[in-house]
Length: 504
Image (cartoon, rainbow, N blue to C red; front, side, top):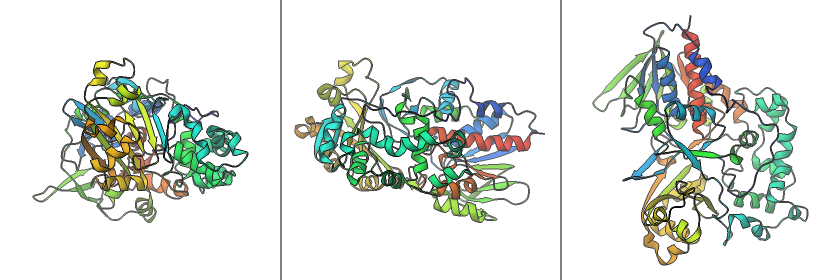
């Protein structure tokens, strides 16, 4: 996901697009789906993948009377890219770790399943920013500007004003239809089509920003690995104000959301069931599972496939995908991400530096370092002195690939020590490191989809179009890439299509 929003900054907002109202008790997508009635008895749906898209689709279709079978390749994990790693009674997030205020679908299910939420600290002025060998507090980020060669006019502008010159200028002039077009599978307005041809880097150049100004934003806003992605990806988040609004986390770990959803299914998820083929002959559809001691088949009236596209390329499909869908499956880009969780003897960042939640940023291989938010309100000294898990490194793109190969103590701890001086003399404060590289995980093969210029216009509608009785879902099949919201949104879309087709 895009990583802006570390410093004490806010983005001046236009009249932003709201996909759905955060104040609505039942989001319109769910309300419309649950209003469908009179599904014929005995109608069966296969769901491949027990991530958020698959679980939400299964949950809602079950409520409508469909018979649901969920097949999951992992031996025990439900949640897909929502993955909490546990160390005794402590935990850390290897995947999704926060919920924006306006992600109403995610929040709806947290409420429906009675999961507790608490504030996730996104911005902390006391955290650190280390760029080009100099470390400052986040609140002192402007003092780093002398490290970059800025034009005479750029030196008079704040970072935010530089961003507004390039990005705010676009969002301010987009009409409402053009805003809607940015979220459409088939953008039809000329403005959006042209915008989809550009990358963020291209737009920054187009707006007249110098190399130094671009690198300033890339380094201090943690954008280095995402400037060459599609401009539309950034504009969507800008319009929604994702990075300037409050975030929450789920008490007890983010994985309690998919685990609780899975527990509400009348037929338990079938784990350890990697699908190797999908066959669509006649009126039904069949999934072939490698059961270890031979193949096993599951047949239904419909199939929702939610596996990441890198995994889908390993699944044989008969009679064969349409040419355009095959192109989309092959070409949609996935970003890499690596997280390194650390078990520390104490919360030295709280004791020494007064950092209670939030994240530090480094232009080294760490990427960003995130501190737990659970002590941000009480600031308990006893909690600060106790062992804790923190996210030592969260990196993306080629930085993530490099970290995945070199994530040992000899690499991570010395770089952490450039942020936290205690580790220079007491490296044994870090008792254990646990690395999770999403590009190396066999059932993910990447962290999340993120479009290159042109992908939305050329590929997205083919990706989400039904193929007979088979529908694709997952965050890659949404316009909220990298978020739980995107997975849920796509699962509801697939479930709604099936329910409407089956309703008399």
